[in-house]
Length: 324
Image (cartoon, rainbow, N blue to C red; front, side, top):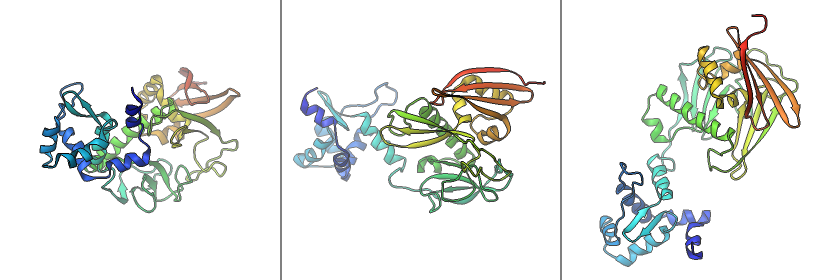
């Protein structure tokens, strides 16, 4: 790759936004996107300069070229057969179609049919309100919730939301299930060392509450959560941080999923119940290197797992509970 080509591909953030900041340039991306052939492995269909210009209704070739040229390299590829939308250009179009930059869906204390796992009280959805500041939250209206640090009481879940188009195309139950799928992949990606936002590398830090005590309907005063052990996973590049309770780290192990399913627990939907009902003991076996032993029990069956400093399951054993 020549130095000129490298410069085309290495856009600074301010230049990238400037390149995309004109309706004609976005129209070029959309026109090339329309030419895709979804039945082919590489679906782009090249368009000649004149064909692309005419499709946009522009008569002035030099004016059209003025807007096309900044897109070349990073967003549009020029081949001998014409112009093709690059994968990065497709991502821009997808984000716009999803309404990620232009639309907003607001849930303001929308009643949720699923009761609070902690106290059995009424729960509500919140999204894009002043309370949640752009995040999607499920909160209990009757107890302190599962964790603090959010600016409001009752937090049971706080995640990214689906895109506006992904929200509007689903009823509330479908939305919640789709959100579970999205969060599942985000957590598994983070635990396995890939930032779910920018795909950069991640660093994990286990946090153990040394004086953990949870009263019914209240959080631990020492760690401000109901979780005795959490892993703070931070992207080394974009600094996005995800706090993951240790029981969710277990879900990267297929045998744990089978254990939970065998005992009637949805591994992702029932994550708070798993913490409250199944996690019996968590013991730090070693500080350096960090080693955490977790014991889960259900219906006379026991699962013992060991997690390392990254939240990765290193050993796993199942059997009958002691005394059963």
